[in-house]
Image (tube, rainbow, N blue to C red; front, side, top):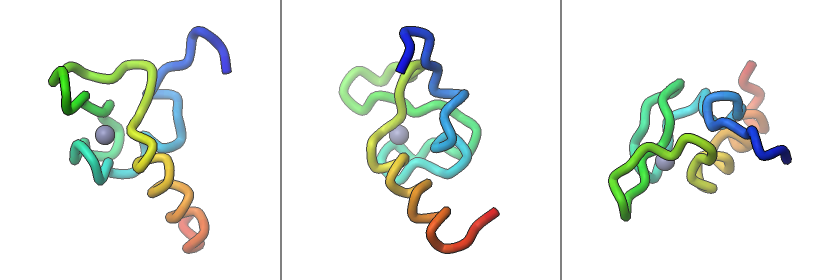
Length: 58
Ligand SMILES: [Zn+2]
């Protein structure tokens, strides 16, 4: 992981976030501060992306 990680470059950005309900392609919003999470996504979103891969998505 580099210091330049960007949420928009993460594969998990391609799925909807089950936590903050961000649509695919949009960054997560922090539930506590209501600010966009530019360098991370919710862990559950990453998990959701992995689940989609396992289900045989593209
Ligand atoms: Zn989120």
